[in-house]
Image 1 (tube, helix red, strand yellow):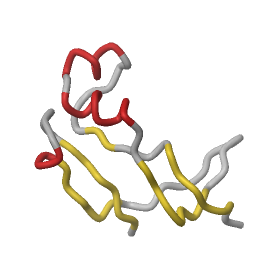
Image 2: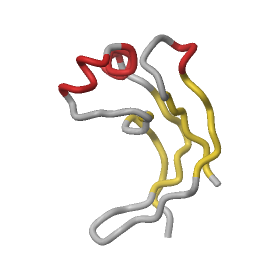
Image 3: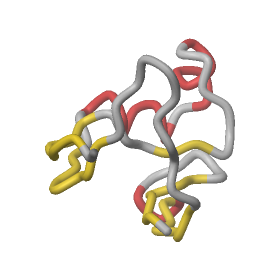
Image 4: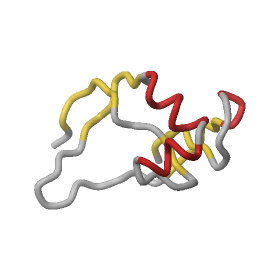
Length: 75
């Protein structure tokens, strides 16, 4: 199992939940990464708090984060 920050409602930090989720597996042409550190950028906060912004980027609920990270590839 892995951990992920998920939100099911738009809002501030109070809507974020740390959850155990199934580990994802890399498909063809993808790489699996062991995450050492993760971060959020200002746009993440805007998307998670504003449904109209999330819709502009094609994001629907439930959603999470996971694009800003540091780690190493897994073999």
